[in-house]
Length: 340
Image 1: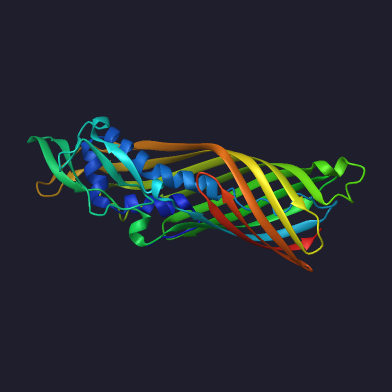
Image 2: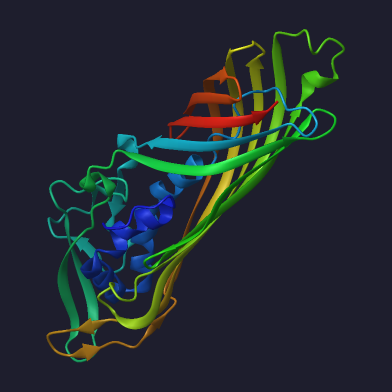
């Protein structure tokens, strides 16, 4: 893989789309088989994406006063667990794919894992002249084969205090065009301090607040020049949307503070393989009919997450670090500056 970007879906999909022989052969076996494999192969990666882009929304339960602001640079590292590096591939779910070793099902690598040793499948396809033909195919590896053990994200975030104990937050990754890839992300949220309404809120040693946040990420990867399949405008487009609902608590000390949160994440990621594809038997010079916009795959997440962290105040600057326990654990580090 040559492209590593903030956008997970581009990073993760490259493992599969760069496996040109695999993609070609799976399309020859049929769109349904290609879609089935792609969905199972990519899902752990897109799920990790949705958890990763929801880290770092807060570093305290205390909201800012009116027009108080904070600007943050956030970096996250998602931890890849062994359970997400493989999936059970059952050939009974496929029309034209079988394992060369004769097994009906076995664990194979996802976009987060690898196949060690390599896994061969036999793909059956219909040749317009010679009828049913078979070809052996090595299933693609994932990020583990590139010695990547965590998934990084980074973004800018800003927040400003509003009236009545409420704070508005926004995060942003500007549209980036690099090589054949285009990515972008934005999100916004509201945090409300419940202790703001208590008569002695300034004297309480802790603050408690609630937050709701929405995040949207989209990207496009044009692989027309590298796919190895005849056609045009071949590309992968992704759209990811998530909602986060969070209860937050923190201490109210002068220099070092501790914070934690319990929340619920819900999201959906959709990836469309678009363009025109003409599967060709290079040895015989035989081409199939063009396949237009072959298929789409999607994955959804929903689950509870818990966060524990600490924040150090150094005058105008603040540094925070936290760990999130969820289906995909992650570590976050933030550099913040502003007026509270």
